[in-house]
Image 1: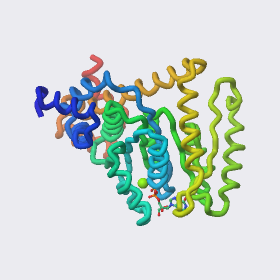
Image 2: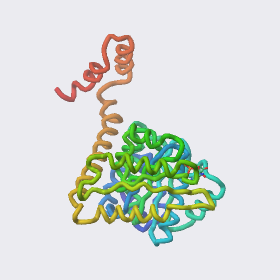
Image 3: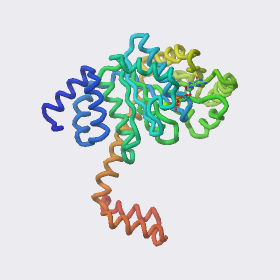
Image 4: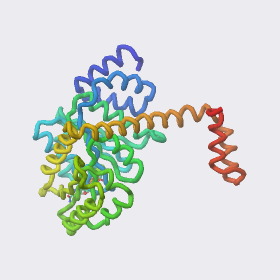
Length: 327
Ligand SMILES: Nc1nc2c(ncn2[C@@H]2O[C@H](COP(=O)(O)OP(=O)(O)O)[C@@H](O)[C@H]2O)c(=O)[nH]1
Ligand SMILES: [Mg+2]
């Protein structure tokens, strides 16, 4: 695509919330970093209206199913919903039951819902950057909410989740999730904690345990501080419960962020998000472009060999590559 009329047309169509154009734009941000840059430049002034909600948790905890039901709930309330599922291991609703699938079809036929999964095709740091840009595309298209499902696997989901205004962390009974979440620092990123599959035994206990752990944070009672709620949910047809409360809580969190009393807090959060994004862009640039211009393939091989044979150490190797930058 050139940067002329075709790109202009795509921008125009994305702003009109054409599903075809949105799909095309997301493919562009995934696969064509050069054109992506110009495209994002053009849509950027139209962004900043959507509430971005990140949903993270271990594989199989019911993220896709929950996102699905949450989208249905928000549609009932007249909100438009964009969904991005970042799950390299399984596509959207991959392991879901037939019932879920039918409901998902119902969703994807709705002109006010857009669903897209993104894989881990992109190289180092590429997926988080592509995800941030995909969120931006949906934001510019005027979706009220953008729900982003990421599989909880450590650092990467923390990165993606930092793009969200509201972060929902999911755990399920009987897996020691609560303790795990704390160990992995996952609880700290939660604005809302969901205990899903609460049709299973032990849900009430884990919810209680989490509420207790949350009060142990010395800042948890600070004035103007958001109190992280723990919400049990069930998404096992025909039993669907806790979703309305979850939707209410998400909107309550949005009100909290928009409250002038919390303007400073919201501003600091926004600063972290934008800084994180700029870092992400620089990181990708450095790895993909600058690194290849600093060191040739053969030099790489030689250097790696030296580290493997312990002739040199990794720090010195990295320094030797970066040296020209600081001279
Ligand atoms: N028992 C029970 N099963 C659920 C619940 N929510 C989802 N599941 C099932 O858990 C499995 C994994 O769900 P999925 O949404 O694909 O999980 P994800 O990998 O986190 O996206 C599917 O078979 C769902 O039907 C729930 O509340 N209770
Ligand atoms: Mg999933």
